[in-house]
Image 1 (cartoon, rainbow, N blue to C red):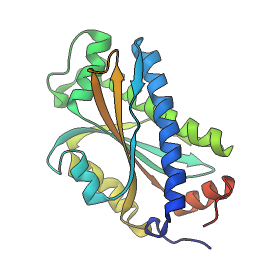
Image 2 (cartoon, rainbow, N blue to C red):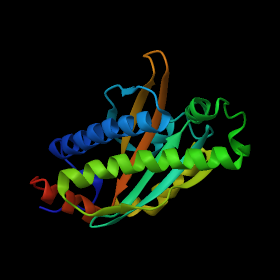
Image 3 (cartoon, rainbow, N blue to C red):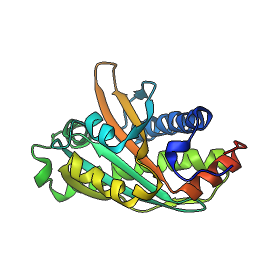
Image 4 (cartoon, helix red, strand yellow):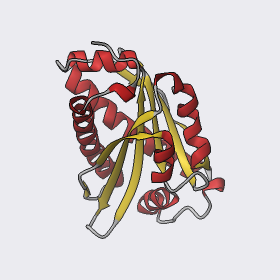
Length: 209
């Protein structure tokens, strides 16, 4: 049985997507450890199916200024990934590498911008590699398109683009532990797959729709 939008997904489908999120988060922690050259662990990620409005609330509300990293997914499945990075996350990243924190995310220098974009690329690739390994599908991603704006404005992009397939997104709340358990940073990943991509994904995993 086919589905027309994500609102029709059942618990077993959500469990599969949550497990993919768990594996992707573990891969992301390993990738960050290599980038930052320090021990990096991750708590069990919180994976939810949320309305766009609820997703905005989870990242601090519509007026909260954040860094958005938009990544297009293409290949045998297609869709969009959106990373939401708080100012504190970006500052902790640059402090680990350059020894200085970002004072104003609206005025990052070229080195900071390039580095944060690379972090987004590494995080995105970690999830896509997990998805590709589990399914055997050939999946590619674009270079992250980074912007700094209010959370409501940033999330309006996928909300408008994917309105035809429903008002829900897969929301992953990650908490990374850098060096010790008291050094926590959080990031949020929002996955919005095309409906054809979900059908292909579940078919490869032997899960009926």
